Image (cartoon, rainbow, N blue to C red; front, side, top):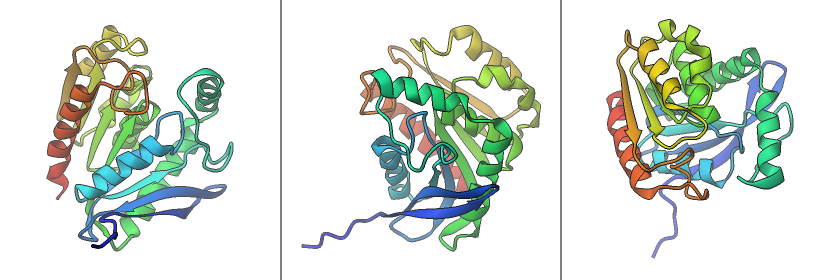
Length: 235
């Protein structure tokens, strides 16, 4: 019996403006596949995000998850409640758009340069990362983007006219962080683009994360299937 894992993972270093950023790399069993930039929640590249990277690598994607809090500390991982949640919120407020766009662009360049990466590259993100996937669709020339409960997207709709690639939005209908009027504003702003929207009854913010109290397995499974079907166009 073999114990070999089908997905190869490792931490790598990427050169970015102002320093060096760690990134979590997960490669598909076939050794080659479309690139996927995975963008973290405010809790860092924690076990959930690493698990998501492996999930998409197993589906055939070459995945990089950049450690976007590198300016504040290396490989910060935080929990979802109490003081760690408060620290995560504080860290999120330190992220400047120009800095993070430079990090996204450097991550995408590194991903595209890898021999395991196919010709096309998408972005997927959760919470803060959902907002950043929207940013990447506007400013970083990705071929597709998936935004899970992207907090703050409604506050940067000036970017919407720059988005021409296919983009998929997942929203929880009981999300205390993203009210229905914010979702409606995003829908209206994306009327020009090939955008898809899915709402999940009974789900709350963070429904995809199996480590959170708000995990909603049925919604997570449905959203995963939709995301994989959407991203299959990258192959």
